[in-house]
Image 1 (cartoon, rainbow, N blue to C red):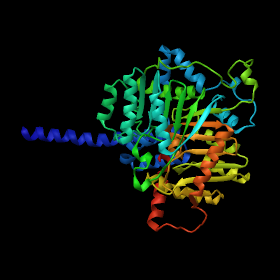
Image 2: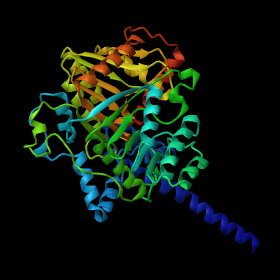
Image 3: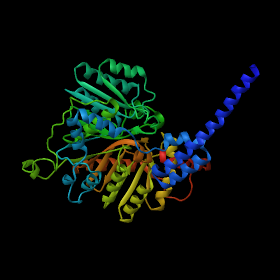
Image 4: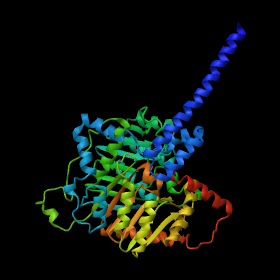
Length: 499
């Protein structure tokens, strides 16, 4: 009898194993069909279909983690909040998305072209301050936090529990103790090493802290490949800071191998700050499922949205700007559209500074068209690696750009991390968006497009100095790297869609 029971149990297990294998193959076939309908490019769809059919045990989990390019739930979260806080959600949409009747009717300026393509309003009367490198950024950020009277909103991709991280926490806690509303968002992947002790210290002091958790709910359980890569500060709805710096000692050059750290941010005073605030509010709705009752949405002077009898609008507009917010919840490829509009608007000069060079085909075509028009196209990237896979993939695209005559320069004076675009003498974009597939398709990003002659002159001088500290790296067809580095470049290129 004991023998029969043992045989019976073994026989049941023997049936479960092949049934499980059949289930895996069935799920792989369904996933292959899903990829044909939803994967962004036909080449990627073919690759996933082949992998899912031939190697289902490996490809199936990878597909549901890495192949998704649409963030589910973000828009639904804002709609859910809107049912209870309609006025706030209406304010967000008003700040970030313009009605067709309010969009520029001419395409004479690059800013007008970018704003129209992005469907975002242009505001005027703003004041801008260029923050070059870590000392200027952190001194300004901490001073602005300490000056807050009503509220502070902060959002960062990376926060470290180090010296500058502690100063940042101290500043937030001091304001919270003074009765100021302080809210902090952080990306759970970017801050994976951030200690619970650091977060607990903030929350116990009254700081409202939330992670931008992309895996909320069962439907979103596998959304681990998306990131909130934005870096923003908003103080009392009057001043904001947007740029490429996170909170950590490395951004002050504390890591010798990547020192000095070269980065850029911009401080904004004026109505454009409300639009940065609207970006934070949308992220906060997703993270906390709550409103921002203290937020100031009072409208002041916005180009194209105020009373035409206002005498201030009869003067030559100054301090023009637009906030370009992009991410995987967009229904259109807004990041590619933003870059394409800026590149297409260039008539004389197009300078792009980015830490990561992994463009998609649309960006390469746009650069080729600008070069064919006789535009001075230049790209500036680092010669120091902080992410090796992305760094190696960049060598392939260097050669690709050399084929169309676009020079790529590598910065030789430390780690270059700034994200900056300069179009002629009339437009600059500064923010968090890299020139790579992850920023183009997988990250939540924010860029500020600015049309202000004095500010653009500062950016031009800054980039002139950067190019003076760089050497062209794709001017020769000879492979200057050893064979194993070239092999790593080829391998890294295969993973470029998720880098």
